[in-house]
Length: 92
View (cartoon, rainbow, N blue to C red):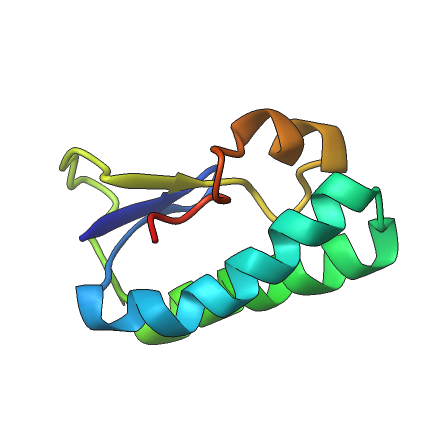
């Protein structure tokens, strides 16, 4: 799966990592819905760090279609709220 982190670029992420990432996504979803700014910041950072750590960066000149787009690390709670689907940012 190709994942784009807005403002950073793309990484290739094995689908097998989605289950682990979904735990963070579930936390982020709940924090975003409740307006927990501190928890939101912490969990968004942890989710993006995990994607960077588990994924392999694609070259900057690579323009493959992204199957998943994640917010930038400095995205606001309201920006992420607008990106959420019924079950979060990641597919379950």
